[in-house]
Every structure is written in C-alpha cells, then in structure tokens.
Image (cartoon, rainbow, N blue to C red; front, side, top):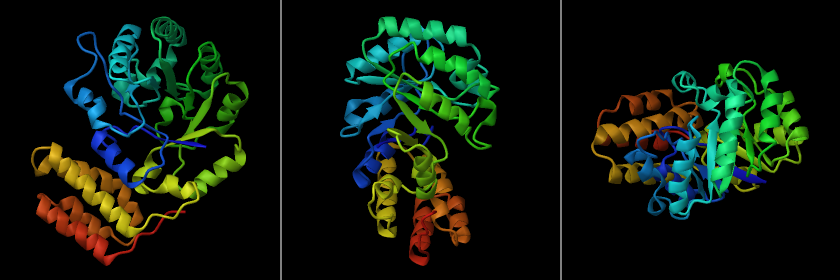
Length: 314
C-alpha cells in the first residue's frame, strides 16, 4: 500500500512537509497545494519558493498544477522538470466556487471535449510522468463514465479519484459505486481519496477494496499526523510526539515568516484540525484561538498539553 499526503491549501507548504517528514516518516508522496500558472509567468514567487528543491530535501514531492490552458500547464511542468521533478499532477478536483467559475479544477470536468484536447496537447509536448486528481463530475455522478473513457486514452502515472461531484463540496458521502466503476474500468493505476479520517474508516474501506494500491489522506493526517504509521501497524500518536511536532512547526514558521500575526494564522489554522485530539479542551482551544501574540499563544498551548490527554479518533 502506498500512502500520499493530500495537498491542503494554506497548510501543507514546504515548512509543514519538511517537519512532518522529519517527525513522521512513512509517506510515499506529498503533493503541493496547487500552482496557478498564467500566460505571464509559470509560478508566483511564493509558489516557486514552495517547490524549490532546497526547501524540499528528502521530501518525495509531486507539484500539482491548476489550469485549463495546456500551454500554461506545459510551460510550468517544464520549469519543474528543470528543478528535477519527474512527475506533475493536474488538479481536476478543487470544488471552490471561485476556481470552478474560471472553468478550472472540478469546473473543467463540465467540458469533456475541451479536457480531451487539453490532455492530448499535454501528452504530445511533455516527456514526464503525469497524474490526475479528479472528482467524478460537476453536477451528476453519471458524468464519470465519459470522463473515465477520456482518462483511459492516456498513459497516466496514476488516476487519483475523490468520488464526489463538485456540487457536493465535502458534504454527503463519497459515491463508492462510482469508484467501483473506476476499479473495474480504469486502464491506469488508481489511488483513492476521500474521508479516510481514522483507522476505522481506513479498515472499512480496505475490506471493501482489498486490492487498493494507493490512498491519499488529507484531513485525517492534519488531525493525527501519525495516522499512516498507525495504519502500517505502528504505535498510535503520543502526546509528547505531538508537542514536539507542534514546537518544530512553530519554530519553522518563525524562521521564514515576519511577525506574530502571520505565524499565528498558520498555527491556529492547524488547531482547527489538531484540536479534535483534545475532546475536553474547548476552553484551552478558545485561549489558543484568542491569542494575539506568540508568548500568549505559547502559554495557551502549554496549558493544553499540560492539562489534557490526547484521544485518538477511532
């Protein structure tokens, strides 16, 4: 089984990836939050920093690209190839309204003929591995049959499937009947993505799909950064490990960001997930979220770890 860390916009940047890899080795791939090329430039300075090889040493990283323009995709992929990357990933999964309105992400799925032409041009002009992360349609799950026919015409490195349509966002349950269609009909290697929050969710999924070769996990790893180790038969996350991970991450952000506000924004966003490990910690979590300066934040976090035990979701 292969384990991938899903891209999470604003969270899983190079500082997070490097420190997660150091504290919890075992991931087979990390994916960058999507890069958004334009005709003027392949990447913004911030995006370029995120993929620089020196910022991702020892991290098995796949850059993800969000665009509906084949020329922009090709240009960005070639730039990344010059950095040493062997694989790039096309984002056809983002359900954000602002992204979809620009006919990108899962919004591109509504135009299968244009998507077909896009992929044809990309594969004709790139000599590197190309994977796709996709939803199963824009409005209805019936759209997936045509999409799968298109994907099957190209030698993808793998097809990562999140079995929801765009309008589901992250609500409703994944549509597993459609994923079964992919398992039986895909000519490309598959990776499953969607709601693998805990070991219990993972075990139920693998009971139904015992031949699964790869899974991508996002929110579950933000709650429990040791989840993959646990799935591989290792020990559950310990409180001391979580504190060490937190402290290294805080220091890492302080080293590359200016001012308390930017660092606190990053750390508080992570606590939206990690706070689930402290079911009795509502008061402590409130203090963390109210902190306006780093000393105040550190004191609130220290109280959380001193007063409470973690509880690993089942």
